[in-house]
Structures are given as C-alpha cells and as structure tokens.
Length: 71
Image: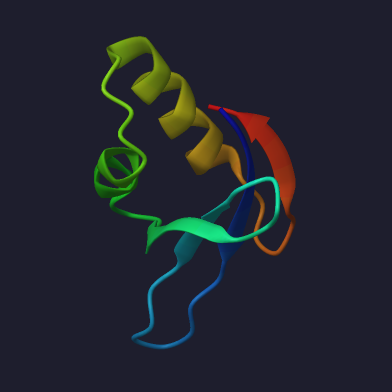
C-alpha cells in the first residue's frame, strides 16, 4: 500500500506522533511514535514481515519530513 508518512515532534507532555496519509493526503492513521503496533493494527497490517518492515520505516523517519513509502 503506497502511503505518505509524517512524523511530528511533540513538546513538553505532548508525545511525538506519526501520520499515515493516503494518496490524496487524507489521514488514514494517526498514532504515537512510541506505539507503532497500534498504528499497524489501525492499518490492518497482519503479516509479520510487512509489520517489521513498516516498524523499521517508522523508527527511521525524520521529524517534519513527509515521505512516500510502500508498507
């Protein structure tokens, strides 16, 4: 599934978040960067290999940079 990913930096008690956007840039998932398992559940990704690859992409994201990814 081709998506756009954006990691936003939290301040103070507000945590870091990851946005997953569809090709039309509508948000299809929004979750804390520390809880990627919840995000993968929201995206209905059940395959272990795909989950692992997506989790690696989430952890390597730079703050404030939107990237296109295939997860």
